[in-house]
Image (cartoon, rainbow, N blue to C red):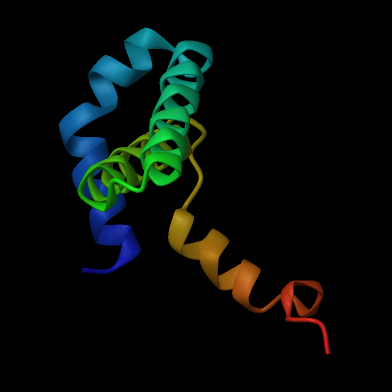
Length: 88
């Protein structure tokens, strides 16, 4: 599945609720999920980390939708940015 397709699925499924919650509170939910991912990694619980990675990705796409940002374009720009290449 490509990023644009996934972002559209997230938008279709969650946008109304997320938009009503607002960007600030949605960002707080995102931060909470990142914290849960960090805790799973710290504890070595790979199964929980997998679940939290999914949560973090969905909340990230939700934030992008609320900001009207095309994440596929963001990724393309990131990968084409010479400053983002590994150091030699």
